Image (tube, rainbow, N blue to C red; front, top):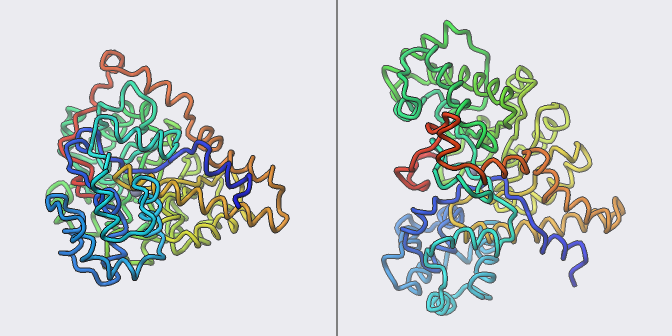
Length: 455
Ligand SMILES: [Zn+2]
């Protein structure tokens, strides 16, 4: 029997503060079938970890072969091994909601494929996310720049300005020069380019995002202009072949510039912390949020949003949010990585740190069907979590409902100034953007988000 609280959480609008939702054009151009909708997401990494070969997994999500029964049958022994993980739960919830599949069997998959309605129609992404997942909006990191023109004239898909290449200490000079129409041949040029990038983009961005933890330690130290200029010259000359020390030096310098510019434009700076996607590469010490303590301290006017609860170092992250006035936490991806841990995290957080610095949901995935599963998973576990607090006598059910509404809607609206941001996007068009001299912020994406080559 569901409580009123769980009903509320299951049926209310929800802000989604982090996804990598595929562009409309590439989503529509891809082939889709029941298995891509259900399995083309994080779950393949649990299957691989359980022993499934890359070949079986590639076949599982390759819609060229119409034999869905066979494709699932090959992976079934491994599916049995992971059925209880958070990633698998996302699959099961999406299967039930979108395809009325009670238990995943080859027969059920085959029957679902017969009636599969999701073939990549126009606005299918939006329908899945807005109408079925009942999301208020989603915040997308495309992993790259510039912004896609489809962002103008609507207010459901909001976008982060991506700063990964800068923070990683390997600026994408081609993209920068093309976007800004200026050469970047010195550290001074790079500083000016960052400035200009923000000048033309900040108005439309909901936040700035970097996932440099995938290619370097989160440890940060202040760098002098002299050292950074020497490293810049090496990185400019050697590109990705530049020594790690130079990339770290230039990356630290860029992080500082990006953080200062975020503060000037009042844009939150979202940073990946904790767990890695894929398999067989995760230096667990590098990805601790605590590595950034000096960075947080030296940029007191920047609002930092540390992501993914730094799993598995999540108590350290609670300590950072409790201590630093400029640190907030986004639980995106945390529920599917380990829902029990995420549930426990919410409770540990509530009894330690201010509630206005916690953001509870983002699916962090490419396909809207996967986001549907992850949103259902969030609603299920978040309901359970607050129900526990009610049972413990921390709050009444009525207070828990108010708190749920606060986390699901009110807090993101406040923090990201969403009413204003949405109005800006709704009214933006090619003319208004040209009038402001912001054309450079936008450009048709040459490849899909999946093929961006970045984590
Ligand atoms: Zn992400």
